[in-house]
Length: 77
Image 1: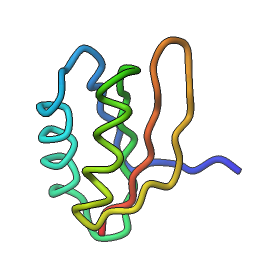
Image 2: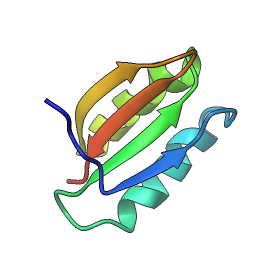
Image 3: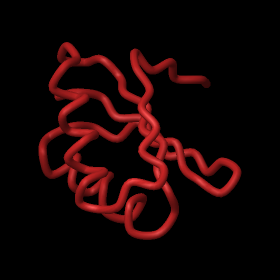
Image 4: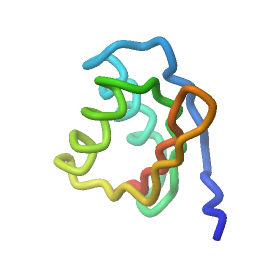
């Protein structure tokens, strides 16, 4: 099953907590229920950003490991 995101942002190379802040700002521009794909580096970004977005009430729909980075799909609350 392939989940199609409404918008995609590339936050590779962006350190925490800035990557979370940028993801949150992009989510604010979407309508409730829309999906955002966030490209994140391994390590702290992929460890912290999903949990922070869940704490904000959003739903993580998937985390896909790609070539040396991750694609996180988040549904806006």
